Amino acid sequence: MSISSVNSSLIKQSGYINGQWCAAENGATISVTNPATGETLGQVPDMGINETRAAIDAASQALVGWRELAPKERARLLRRWNDLILEHKEDLARLMTLEQGKPLFETLGEVLYGASYIEWYAEESKRAYGKVFAAPTADKRALSVQQPIGVVAAITPWNFPNAMITRKIAPALAAGCTIVVKPSEETPFSALALMALAEQAGIPAGVINMITSTKAAVVGKEMTDDSRVRKLSFTGSTRVGKLLYGQSADTVKKLSLELGGNAPFIVFDDADLDAAVAGAVISKFRNAGQTCVCANRILVQDGIHDAFVARFKEAVEQLVVGNGLIDTTTLGPVINKAAIDKIAAMVDTAQTQGAELVTGGRRHPAGELFFAPTILTGVTQDMEIARQEIFGPVAPVIRFKDDAEAIAIANDTPYGLAAYFFTESHSRIWKIAEGLEYGMIGINEGILSNEIAPFGGVKESGLGREGSSQGLEDYMETKYLCMGGIR
Image (cartoon, rainbow, N blue to C red; front, side, top):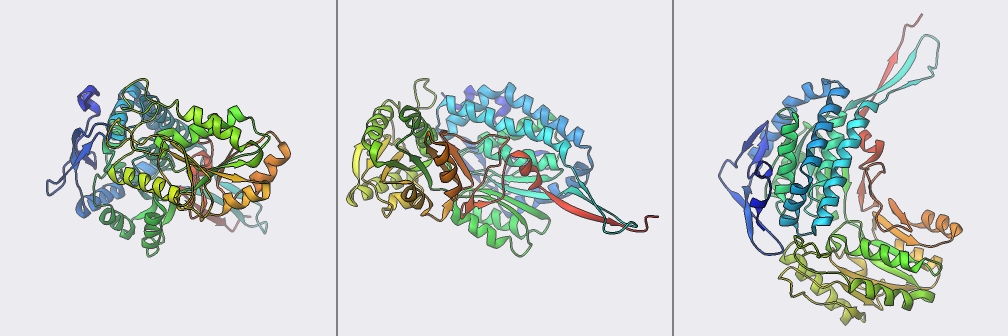
């Protein structure tokens, strides 16, 4: 199945600046391929500094009109965008599977998840409340108002090419900001399809602008250097996030950084084993393990270690590896050759360091970018595979003795995005949840993200929160008003 199977109105092979679909000034293009087959799907512009600057110009010019639009009208346009996404959900899911690889049931789930943020912020846009304070003296009044921060720049990754965009654009627009988005060059078609539907929804020219480019460092530097860009929202690696953090210092931008993770998935001896196994499978192997919040280390208590591993192995071996467009597929490819080479090397290194292979551990015959779902036992916290983000379908299992050791192992990382644990003890729930140094914790749950909850991490996993009412606040500034001469 090729890209021609998708509604042609959603296939855009151009960038979008100030309401116009446009090519790169120098005519350069990026070829986009299907990771399951290697087929070339099409080309998009390879833009650079000039196009980025033009997009910021457009966003800056559109800002006054957009922020002065009544919140109710901004909400109406966002709801229309949401409705169009839901109307085209099957095509958007198919397009995402073609360029990203995950199975259709996962891409459809992502489209619905992404749309939920637009619906949520359409509603939240009318709830940007100010405050009135008790004044220090009778002749004064004190209050604060919330105002949009201004032009926003957003850089999004390939692993969730729909939801990572809606999660940034929706609150920015709801707050009254305009935005310039650079999606991943690996998965630009999903981003551009969303842009096409935003245009159909009637969102004015310049309010959303989209730059496609392989020149991430150049585009990012232009975004961080421009003083008109008052906020940067980035989802990606901690290494790149730190670079953008430093580059934003000169203009003192507000930042939202959702960076790397090293999520522990802890199974205590009183856990419901069936629920824990099901949770581990979905947390570890969703999107072929290519999520920032997926289980990176499986910690299992001594008393149930062997029983858990046996059941986990049985469940993992039932996963069906293949092209995501085939209905029976439950595990698709990884994104590119660099990714699969890294995964294979990490598995080999772990075994040389003493880990034991339970299942998988090899490239899969389904294609060049497929890796068999893998379980390793005998893993220790000092091994490379326990300290680095794997971003692939590999589950290292670490044995622990008691609660204190579990917390110590879990927290022994510079990252702090997501963590998970399974237990039937209410006392243990509070003790472990309070002891884990993570921004989000799933308790007897393998998936935790939704639009109503604040998504984000601590330590080197980032700054700020996406989702919830807090996500709207991250695109606004508080202005204090002191009124004197009250008689």
